[in-house]
Image (cartoon, rainbow, N blue to C red; front, side, top):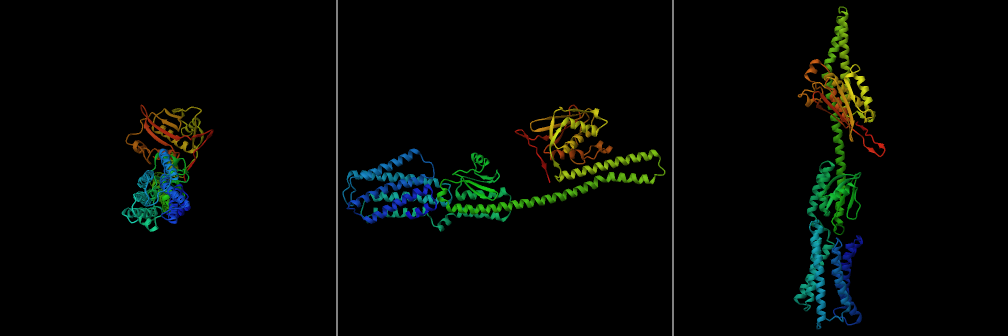
Length: 573
């Protein structure tokens, strides 16, 4: 046992290993010394050796106690009490007048000493057995079995000592029971400290089956990274008896956790914790972080190797999941591009038919009646041709805008814009003969961080619609809050019919009056909202009070860092 303990301590120089090594080195020295001097000690040197042997037997249970206490934070009072008991008994042993020989009459002072010796052994062994049994609950099977064997061994060797102290001849029942208990204690200590690989394999079958199931699911098919972590973390925790375990991204953020407390979540969000009670294993772009139980460093050598293997397989599964996600995303992108192309072709064919037919009909009519038509008739047909040509050009431009927005191919690059001046220029551009019908209620110093193209397309569309379908005055208001720039365009017309409101921002949505008069294409509001959302904002509608339509544009305001304004540049490709 001493050789086994020394070998283990050399491989893993832990505090617990040092205490258990010291315990069995002391016990081994006692056994060798007793074999060397025999049962009777007559010389002065032999009597000193016998006294030192008894000191070794006094110290042995205390060293086992320190081994059991090395995994946690024991009570300071208990530490002082056990150390004091041991020190007093060691001093008492050294001050004994003599050691009675076998068969000799035992004086009262010797009987009192033996009772104190047995009480010391019993108290410390009970503490060791109880602590190891209690700590074994909830541990992996191998660690739990080893702790149980060590607890049994501590109790068995105490029983052997107590029975031996009762006396009796070498061939008495007491000697047989003592020898049997001592042998069982030795076997239990050996299996608890260094169980053979075959026995470990048998003990580890429950965790092994769960690990095999996890590996099968990891390798059977490529799943998402979250699913990989969700499947593999519970068996990983069971392998080492971890209190909590998680995969975290190298750049920060928790991928998935198991049994994490709020404090542990806070630790992970602050960065991968590097503390003695936390174990970290790198897994490619992720890091495995776990809080093992205090007994893991002593009882978990093979479990750590198994955990490392499963961690490496998890890294492969993460790579497969990432590749599958990239493939899925690329396939979805291609499918979406194909769908957009088909939709655009169908949309263009459907919506362009009317203006193209009108332009074609007018051209043919002009050629057919060019010699017989009056000038007034020619002027009217030319006017209609210009209108239909303008409508056709507008529709083509809007269809192209929609196709770019659908494909996320519109770059949004915010710039500083003076809102009032920008709105006044837009009004003068889109309605030069109706500027008196538009009231711009914007503070002169208001500045927006917005993409000029998106801002112009949205606001000009709202102003044109308000003038075309509503009644003056049309009011344009703007204000800036902490997080958003708000632009409101409001008129005093009849507002949007209730049956149109739910589909107002869908493509080719037009009210009955609009369809009857063949005004507009029904694409303006759909394009305006798409520009707003590409800007990470939104465009909404509500009825104005007392009458009219009220459109509200919200655009995000970039945050300030010190004296530097940080502008969000969103480019979707």
